[in-house]
Length: 171
Image 1 (tube, rainbow, N blue to C red):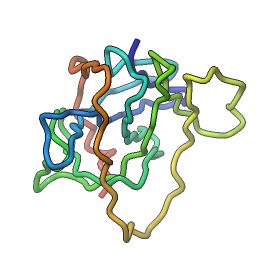
Image 2 (image 1 turned 60 degrees about the vertical axis):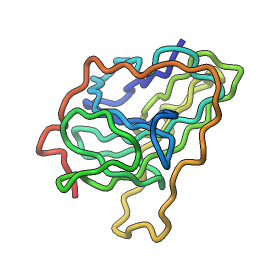
Image 3 (image 1 turned 180 degrees about the vertical axis):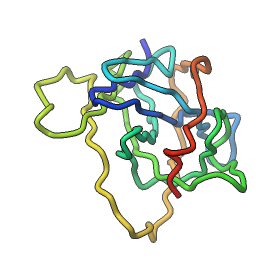
C-alpha cells in the first residue's frame, strides 16, 4: 500500500510531492523532496493507504523535462520536509500537479513517461503522466490545495531523499 512513482524515461528524475498534513496551517498539506528515481525504477514515497487522499507532485529530469501543474509553492534544492506555505530566499516557485486518488485504491502509482506512444492499457490505480509543455508565461492564478479530508492516514517516507543537482535548477 502507498503512493509510488515510476520512471519510464531514459533519464534520472527528481520528485517532490505534497500530502495531507493536519499539523500544517493555513494550508493543511506538507511537501517533501527530493527523491531520485532512475530509469526503470519505481520508488514508494508514501507508506499506507493512498485511497481517498489528494496528493500533489512536481518532477524534473536530468534532460530538462518537467512534470508540473498549477499549484505553486516554494521548493528548495536540498532535501526538505516542510508545510506547504514555508519557503526560503533561495527556493524556486514551482507548480505541482494535483492527483486525487479514488478511495477504492490502497496503492497508487504515477508512471512518468516522455511520449504518448508509451501509453498502454493500465490498471485503474496507475496514472500515466506526460511532461509539461514548456511555457515562458507565468501563471496569473495562484492556486492552493483545498482543505484535505481526514481519512485513513499513511506517512511520508523520508529516506532516500537527495538534493537536486545544480545543473538542473531552473529559475
